Length: 356
Ligand code: SF4
Image 1: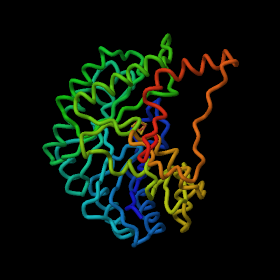
Image 2 (image 1 turned 45 degrees about the vertical axis):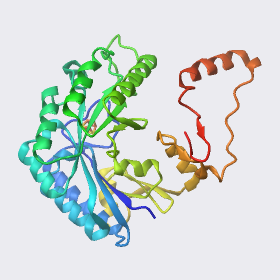
Image 3 (image 1 turned 135 degrees about the vertical axis):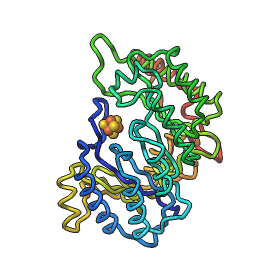
Image 4 (image 1 turned 90 degrees about the vertical axis):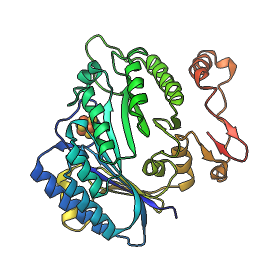
């Protein structure tokens, strides 16, 4: 079996961003400490000393509100429950405003070796729209401080689909990525969020920006390896690849989703119920189901530019979905015009290798 990943959901934020759909609660240091005791219990409940773990991901929520000592204690607890590799990739998601040189040095000493910085944009107008708690200078400083603290693996999150964004306004983002040279860039599209009066969602504009991002990051030396993710050679996220390659991952914390031995589970997205379950020695799962690994491998693997190995399709009689007949006119015309821009990149089969 491939080594597993471990995801830790830290469900606290200083404020709730209007566009965010992750499970989170208002940050309060006492509640966070109590929560960490529960996560350690869940790690004990999921104990499997034979399970090799080679990546840990602190996500949230805002895990940069974790004190470095608390991150160290969680890693220590994880190593008591699983066979945690000494060289594991250990990622912490961070909001720029939470970071300082000292804190970053302490995270590094705690064992965190990859930092994922939620920059979102380097345009102040975009940051004001998102009501972020940082400005562009804080993101630039965060990357510089991370380098000084010894982080050789830094990822930046960017968002597209913001109301005032244009190809021209994206130039500053590209210039700063070129200057800061993060090892990895994740690009997400703003979805299902309220827009300012007069602003309309524009999937066509978002698609144009997405293709602009692909072309520009390729020119800066980033390989596009997953729908939303780009990396310098050898710097794809070891942890996130497990999600798409159907490799095992344990997940702890409220709302966290894991996948082990073909079983897919999701924890309760409610801190109170989560605490009650863990406190009484029960796994805090709201859902658990056995999945057909081959089907899941296809569904998740198609997010990857490497595609799905064609051997993974053996269990299926894989046939392309037939195009609608010419004679169904209106729907066929709509189908063709919608599919046309993607025909060059979709549905390619590379015989003997992969399908993507
Ligand atoms: S800080 Fe991050 S996790 Fe928290 S509400 Fe904002 S976007 Fe969501």
